[in-house]
Length: 116
Image (cartoon, rainbow, N blue to C red; front, top):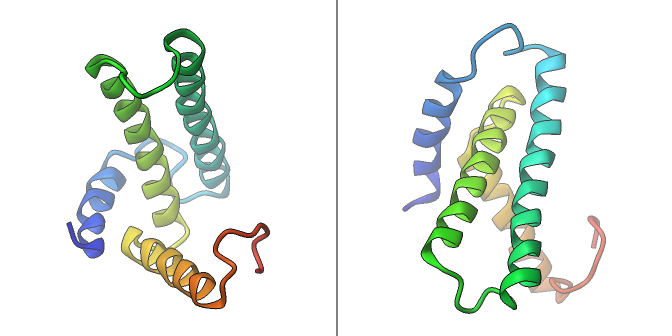
């Protein structure tokens, strides 16, 4: 998949963003909070796999599917929030890749901090 094809998903996700919150400041706050929550749910599932199944090497297909569904929720909130901020997913993806390439070229890919 090319990066710009992410926009097709984003456009469909935006069509499901309905109710009283779309295109409001409160809606953007809501999306950010829900994005963090869904990322947390993904982390919780991973933690339970580490705790209960000795890691992730041989996890069952149903566990992989459960993780993929949580990641789908993360993707939905990310897609809609980016759209609310006026960015396509392709733009966000390309900005991220540019940032990572720049860090790699400067030898600071493995460091910490946003402005390295």
